[in-house]
Image 1 (cartoon, rainbow, N blue to C red):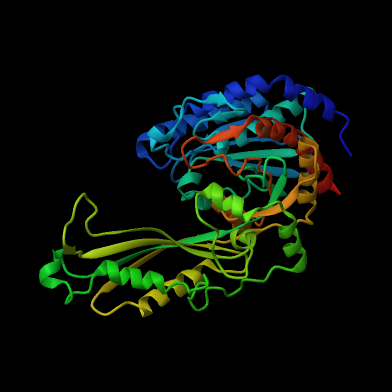
Image 2 (image 1 turned 90 degrees about the horizontal axis):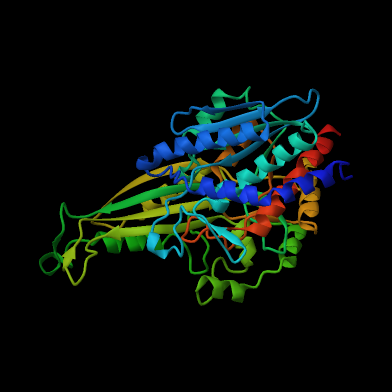
Length: 463
């Protein structure tokens, strides 16, 4: 049932679209790059800007909170006694913009063209945070109140893996207590396919260094008698998968469940064209585990990927050496049922058992992010589906995502919270890449969706 004030809310946010766009442009101009210490002062200024916007929206509490690292912006409106409480999460830090020469327009000078606003952080995640603040402002302006209690937590370290976030959550359990977390840091399946994300993959990673001679040596003198670390590393990596794309590490798939018939049918019903997707990616064809569809591989199956390799001479021309070391960075995306610690141990043990003679190996493992799965039958998810249908004109489909949002796992493990993932970005928004953008259709539709969402959640969580 649509709330009686819904029309007035939508009329308000439509009348203020240009103001919201101007606000987003100003926020994009702040290079709040958490990965670069030279920009940490910008991250702090970004948190202060979020707090100022929270106050302008009408939140009764808004302040910068310190963590063990970079600050978060926190705000709340808790004047609905007896009503449910939601926690809205997002992040205000952004990825580095390098290489700058690949941007059509400067990354920190937001530019509108072809129906989108371009700039670093436009969709990931400043624009999607602003959707919520605009919707909160609309409710408080039109109604003088919100239909439920709201807490807003906007983080400053998400783009560097949220290293301080879990400790912050643990210290602030009582302050952040709520009924459900709402996260808008995801994308829809396509512009004409509204979507709700119900699963996120987890993440662990390793740095593997193979060491040979104490220093680089002459390949004419010592080639053939000294094991080449690059060759040894290539042999190790090649052994991680079988010829059919399946990870060969014993125990890697422990806990992974097979999709049921309904899940397979839902995947098959989505408008996914493997040939077109390959062409868009610039590859001859999509590959992976045999007998698995591309969407199943992307959302429901774990992966083991080589993210980078280096060693030896990288400069122009030739340098005939046997290098002293070679290093690879490897990561695994996990699905529900997998234990990150067990996967880390299994891969490390496999590598150690397959080190070629004549070299030594050093392995450094990191990451402990579990996959998260939200039931599509949860009342909050059903409420989000109704809100998205009203905001975009058609019912959403339920999708997974191959990516990882560490705080989602943290909310699940530390606060035991159900979560609604209701992002509205597009697959081609170039997040983390040059020419990041946010479609204005999605931005404005997202604001309208959030105005409906709070009423829908208040009703669903009170039932």
